[in-house]
Image (cartoon, rainbow, N blue to C red; front, side, top):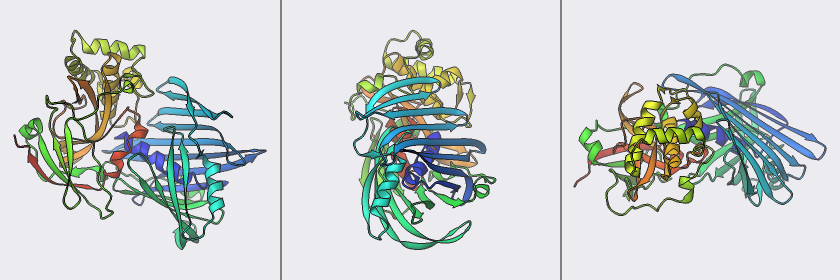
Length: 479
């Protein structure tokens, strides 16, 4: 699930934004295993301050290596006023770029390039949003007195959103670093990423330079440690990202259960008290159960009135990742839909078409946009999902992409497990119905965590649940 890779890229940059030193190398570890490096620089040229952050990591998915690199360059005034930014993310050779310029009128001129397709638009700069230097100055202003608490708005260039960061200064602590012990100030932060607030802990010097950063997420512990360049860029260690996100089923599921529907009882594996989050859809209903547990009732959409809201205009429009207006996408959509006239039949034809069209089922692909998949038909579940959603939109059917888990009898040496997955939903016959071109269609073994536009940066909800959930019981739905 490449969404996990995007989230790994987003969080360190968000947390480390607040304290860019002049030149710092950091080693990146996942559960104690080195997976990459991060380099941060800050330079002043006259009245302009430029901050650059670049991270490179390597992970594995079922034994296949996936490389990710992400970088951001911010330009601001000495007073921390945002002027310009550029963000680049590359996963397995697939790159997307966001460039923005903030005018004196408060307008943000943005150019986005995804899959070779460029789009430009004008947005309003979020009031009070800061880039790296502005965040550094805010931290400097509040100081490091234990108990100090303050909030800032950190602009995220990757998803063009400002997120609230709640910071609380703690006591000085002795921290072991690769180059020795240091007395550092502990700072706890809560980053409000959508409906999934993420907590981080950093340890900083008196000059605000981050020496250690800890981000618990998805059943993993992401750690960044300041060290020499040689240390940071040394050999990486193998780390399979899927292992910690799988959910073991208590037993094998029958084909009849998966066709007709199931009741799944889920509980949290930790004691944080943070609620597990799942999506409510026309196929999945959720209910809180005593003891902090969650009951999921999953079955194909009925003929009753939709439990969800009707689609919005955005559900039919092209975007950076679902380029449904591109000639290549329109051509494929017409070919795939065939002679079918009803939306339900068209979507079924398109699901079958995408399953055949993506000839190479490849876990090493990062996160490709629909247009990239149309030009190079290979990938895993996410490539099937974004292409199918784009094809639906190309012929006027509202669609969206679902991020979640799916039951598999055997996967990566494990039996009877729910693994990270993505599929598409379409508005047909007055309901949101799921279509899974990567597998043999939708069944009740699909657990939805969140729905979205196909933009990988916006799948936040699932990351507060992945890695900290346990399936306690599964029963067939009673008629």
